[in-house]
Image 1 (cartoon, helix red, strand yellow):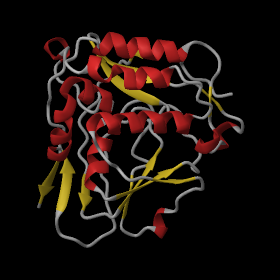
Image 2 (image 1 turned 45 degrees about the vertical axis):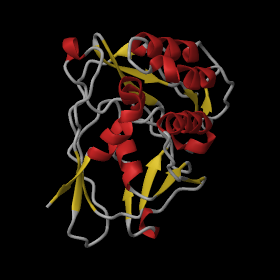
Image 3 (image 1 turned 120 degrees about the vertical axis):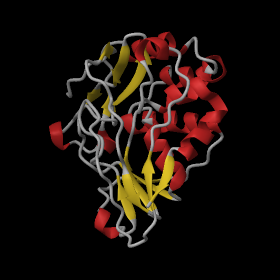
Image 4 (image 1 turned 90 degrees about the vertical axis):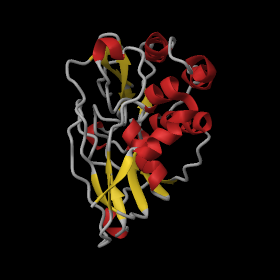
Length: 249
């Protein structure tokens, strides 16, 4: 059984802005499963026409696979989904089961409500997510996928995605951008991403500030979960996501 914190708690680090650099146009993104993934991930999902979600990789704890970050009056807070690992550190993501111990679903939803109930769009979208926290999902990847689909419905986005139950070999996809290793444990560390293509044009991710309820106390907090953007900006989130990838010579 994997040991994870089921209750939300404030993190003691600040998420620093990443400086992503990719050569365009990659034809495929290779991504891990993500629990309410970060804003920057959705910017890339919008920009790249094809996505492969790798559920055959071995589980890496304390990453986006089971952890998201939200904004509170005290700053950044991590929410971590507890999982049961049948084969220890060699458990494939596809086989990760949601822990049946504790009341983490209720705790996570209460944390999200407390953080975002005063945002402009929480009341419009809350039911889409609350319903999922009440459903008895068995596997982590299915729960994450349902949350991702809820995000896409709320933002009226169509993001084609192929699921692989076996490990995805990046070498088999020469024009791909592999994001699996760019979700380090706990804190986010800026990284440099390259796609294997000789095209001279490049795109870089720029964390554009947007309205956040607690910004007067905390300042703008970048790279939080996509729900932070969704609940604060609503439909305008699509425009910000598209503006966040900018050309760089």
